[in-house]
Image (cartoon, rainbow, N blue to C red; front, top):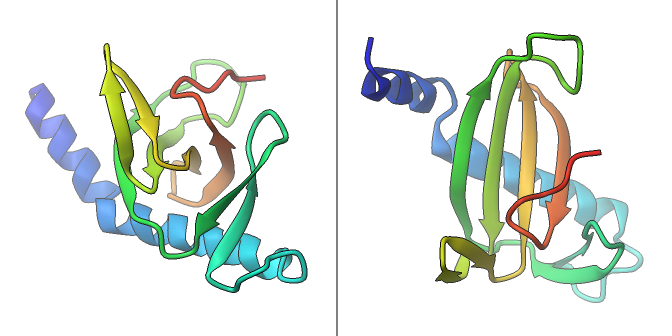
Length: 130
């Protein structure tokens, strides 16, 4: 099995439409949880890693940047599973290999059965762990 076969299997196991749907559901959950604070039902208030609040349209476009299957050899982090990095609102700019999202990045961590473990919002492409 070569790399192309592995990538095809990854896309088959975790298809992009599922990821986009999962992100939309996460935005909906946040909107419902913060309904009293949200000025407009079509917007979502998101707290990014530096505790700043950004406003994102609930139906914002999503650009998937990275999708990965990873194997943890030790009992650390979330264990073996999948990780997805996407840009909310799409990509605003790419300069020197660094992507700038329109609103923010979202990282989803899935377990090996494709259950979402955690979701993180951040402004920088490389989100610091821990």
